[in-house]
Amino acid sequence: MENIDFNDIQFSDILIGSIQPSDIYAVTLTMRSISQSVPRAQELKERYRTLKETYSKLEEENRKLVGDTSGLVESNRKIMANTQVLMEKNVRMRRTLRRLKTVSCATLSSERQTREVGKVIRMHRMMGQLVVSPCRSHCQR
Image (cartoon, rainbow, N blue to C red; front, side, top):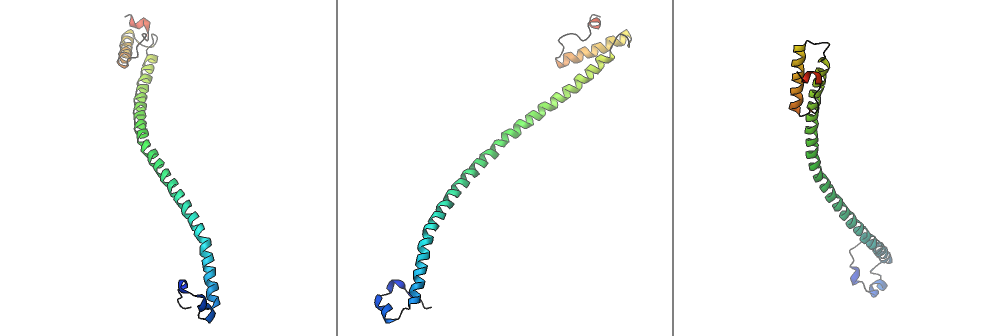
């Protein structure tokens, strides 16, 4: 098929046969196809633009959320540090309780009882936990 500029076609060209009816039919089909696909292309362009905007908004929201986690990480570090301190205090308190259990009038000599009770009282004072003396009978000595 030769190149035909359809803008230059005159009705007389069709009549004298320089342009075949099959060419006109092909052009008509092409024009119909284009006229149907242009609105569809516009619709697709609009949907693409909407999707692009939504993607940008979601990307920005994601960026904010990821940025917010840095505060959570810092908060988590503080919580872990506090937990570590509490665990250490717990170990010390358990040791103190063990000592209190071993310090009893029946099992130890009075000299050793006095020494052990003194250790326990010092430990309690050091930790700021002493409200009432652990063993009233020994604290009076």
